[in-house]
Length: 253
Length: 265
Ligand SMILES: Nc1ncnc2c1ncn2[C@@H]1O[C@H](COP(=O)(O)OP(=O)(O)OP(=O)(O)O)[C@@H](O)[C@H]1O
Ligand SMILES: [Mg+2]
Image (cartoon, rainbow over all chains, first blue to last red; front, side, top):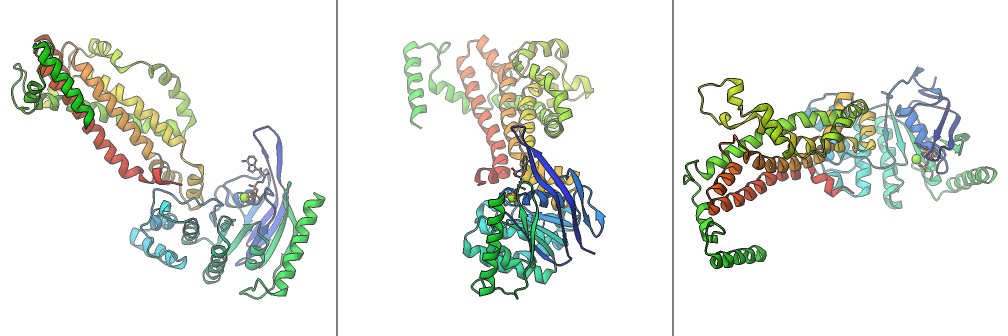
């Protein structure tokens, strides 16, 4: 049985002009334990919305989210979320940001600092423990946000275009770091992106989403061995194939 | 530095020209008063004592305003129910200048002091000088800036901080202590700064009222009646200086806790 079961989720919004937006329609997918799953889709297709529903920040109109066959009510205690915008707490320094989740569990300061330090090292922020978020570059802030989510130590990590705002080189480096962390920590990751290259590089499986309303249009297992070579013919072939699926979808929509 | 010098020069020019210390004393006469803060003035005590009395009244009234204003502001900022409950009263009271309350406060509280009411009978402590009426108007003056800024701070906490905390396992109580409070602290401190300023202004006015027996405001009124203009002007300068020091203290606290807000990108 799947670790996470997203079952026929429907969600609509009413915008400022009182128009109804059908964001998600019967969205259904499974995610296995330890899987790296990418949600790929054009802007506005409901990627953020589904992550918010899985984490319990948003309620679906109907349908349900199951973790180990248990329905999620309120905040999902098995998951954490890395937001699309970096959302470090600006009044806390790096180590206190990263240790936040442990602090919420009332773990004492010495223990949580030791634990946070591991993740600071892991994301390459050693030396910046006492720095405040405004002293960090965008890439460093994003790494801190990822470390904060990892240190909270939940099986399921939801990531909403975490590398969207970064330059290509930094993005590629962080992608590799993330794969290392995923492998070492044996996490399950649902990673949202609209970048085809990123999805192929990272995912075990890609779900291509239809937009307005959002549902899974297409599903693709990526069997290329890691580390993946962006210049390999198989990689390029996949890239072209996915591009065609997306273009067809947009044209027919 | 140039402007104060010019003002002093103009002042000195007219003082010499009028040659009437009961109208406008010379700069050095006022200065002489200021450098002798322990000299007894008109049999009422010295400057230091008057400052001490005024400052004590302000500190007690202000602390009261903070103790009541911050928690109420936190509640009203966070819960719509409380906001609806408080809002009508506040909208009516807010435009009412605290000074307008002074006669009312005098009528209700007479000249009772903390000592009378709480029965610290045989002490000649500072509490003898904390009249309840004065405490009330200082409280009133300090309360609104503190309350309103706290509401503003709480209701403008970014939703993304709250949601980040929630997905990192924060409970309701933790959300309040670890997110809402620190993130609205800069606004709360702004409220405290403004509130303290208002309290200091109000106390001077309150001390000029009948029944007052000490304090810088009292000294101003008393020296006016005796046409002791040098004492009067020295008192005014002291009010300015003490006010600056008070807001400086809060500003230091504010800068300590709000540094992140100015630098946030
Ligand atoms: N709170 C809201 N009120 C109104 N409409 C909303 C709200 N949240 C989302 N929507 C709408 O729902 C749809 C899906 O939004 P969502 O943020 O999930 O898209 P997304 O796939 O994450 O897009 P992007 O790639 O640009 O981040 C959009 O059309 C958006 O306008
Ligand atoms: Mg999004």
